[in-house]
Length: 504
Image 1 (cartoon, helix red, strand yellow):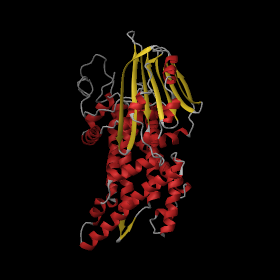
Image 2 (spheres, rainbow, N blue to C red; image 1 turned 90 degrees about the horizontal axis):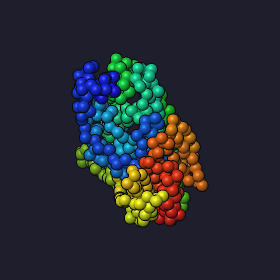
Image 3 (cartoon, rainbow, N blue to C red; image 1 turned 90 degrees about the vertical axis):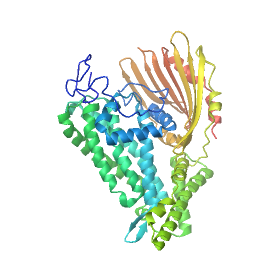
Image 4 (cartoon, rainbow, N blue to C red; image 1 turned 135 degrees about the vertical axis):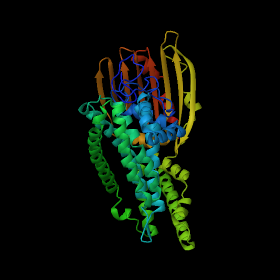
């Protein structure tokens, strides 16, 4: 086995590390970060970033986001920033899926970071030589959403780079640990970027980015088990690849902005006539709604309304700024006081749903769709919840089934709610994956128009099946000591027609 503190190989029965002297049993102490509850489709395998492909990971991430633990995130942020040398061993010892890491930690921080940047540039603005320049609301929203999505994608690619380079620097490949290194190293950059709510302090983001590199330098030997003397070279190569990666992300964001019609002139913040502005808002609302699944004129109207809420905040901030300047007060503070972050997040939630008037189905109705038995296994208990976090609404219901022989199945129905727009966008890529390793097989395919993910270990007789219904709901079955046919039967026991009819 390996020491959780220094990452070096030690005897299986060792009580102390012969390299750093750390007690083996006490090496993993630090923050008390409690991850969100695991999804029923979670897997402990690390062969493919937590044992999940994109479909299962997205399900895990959505579940973790609904159950996000703000105090836990804060504890982890403080620990990794203030005492990284003791926190990395704690992270190494944690058992979390890639979906839990992304949904329960990364996405909340990235959303806050992107929202802070949006508020700073589009609502408060940057004052240069007495002139305040603001990014137009429509362009800012598109840029914010694209940045969130592409940052998460970039994080996975960064983790793949870290994992691929591990043997080169004397380390051991482990995709889940590589994702941990990438996710928690960038904490400093995301936190520092919150200062971009005051654009003139945006330079602090550079300091945060540099500190993130130091965190990576400390984390690579512990999680990837590379020798400490090779950590600098390992970090340097990863950084070079990361810089190239994020240059490409910036180019993609810029390219997509251009493709959706937001030219450089529009982003310059120039004033336009009310008729022209209305036309621009209509075009932006139509583009965003279409990208995220909105279809009707009502969806576009709600998208436009959300944009206009943010525009009003910007106008109020501008008025407060002018009044403060006239009275000799703090113009930036006055502008910031008029920006309601909660209202902004609610507007963002509306936009992520594609402007659809998404009202998550009450968990009691979802529980009503759970069968009383699955393949002869009686129902032992049920649970459900409605939730909202950071403007994202959703609900879920879970049923457990089993017998005295150790056969167990968990069936879960989830209403993705505000995340349905992103789910629909992801499904458009039509992933088709199939792979086998030993006794385990995994595949993702589209069956009868529905995206289906299945993973099963023939030797352990355990696995999971997940189905995306109408780009709005997921049905998941996870079982132990059961054949795959039982999991299929569990999925089919839910009336998908009734489920789809519950969508508001």
